[in-house]
Length: 494
Image (tube, rainbow, N blue to C red; front, side, top):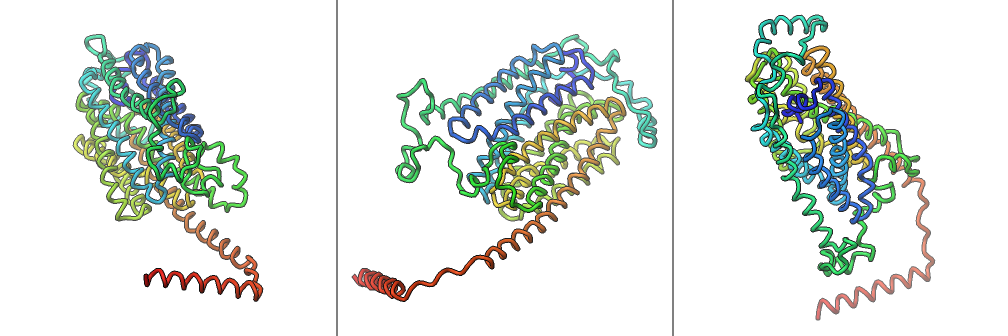
């Protein structure tokens, strides 16, 4: 929505602060979808039907967005799409962690690479349909003086020209509807593919005579899989014992959490706060970098400013692609430290060089590269600390959605009231907090390992020794062992 925000603002006749609530609606519903999406992973049918309906809903919503001429209707439509996106996000992350466990970091990087690839494609599709004339070109006369006063006193903001004569397209209409319709068509193969998979899995109630299930074609799977194979099996008994990776509410109600140390909960909270900040930065930057670029003192051309979103998501996509081999060679915690330190330094340089147009593009690229792999790395890191027995994935996905939801609204309101420079100030503050929370996670990890290690040693000490066998039973056991060894020697010699 970043490059199209001005067109949607004109379409609905709303202000920037009002259109910001569309972001809030989408992210709030994404939060709901993320926190409840794990409930659909209990069975194969539930997971696939949730993916099918969610993907189909996204196409339908994108098709009707151009028909929403009221900001409330637009907020409702984008809220529905956010709910579907949250469900898809949670199901995808949970299943990869449950299947691949210690190798999940690599597969999570690949998953989020495709997320970035999709986000890269959408600005390219929207580019030909973005209206070119929104902000007046004469707004840069006293920009430097205003920004200087803003930085010193934070009282004289750069107010965006909501009612300026150039705040609407010159031709009086917008063509951004075509971008949303194209995206709706591009997304249609996804629900179709899920539907075909359900048909192959023989899960459609109205097609009882469909082809045999794909899993039934594997003879080994037929021998080892229990009859109720429609359920998605957990690869580790510890996962089901501790409540599995269900939704966030089932984790909170799990009775087995009573005996765990406080660091167990601290890792969940601090890891969630890291994603709260970093995903919030991604949402804020993707949502408002266009608005920042077309405003004073940058005052970029609308078409050129739209490329910032494309560059940002291209950098995110490349960063996640590069992180796949890096996950083989380096520890996850080292990647996290480097990435978050790079985010803070980049945002600091963007704030210092706030009038440099070239560095705006360079900084956008660097920010995308550094922040790209934080999400999959922190999910893999926390799950590894907690030995894949908790619901860290659901908690982290939910808190990341909360970060995008709240920080977009906060920064959007500050841009409206205080000016566009607050966009960079907020980004730097959020980045520093994210780095501090990461260091707290690392510290909490060391404390957690000491506590759990001490408890395991205590349990071993307290465990009673194994009872000694009676002499008669011991002799019989030794005789059986000698017979087995004799038979094996005969087989080897034969």
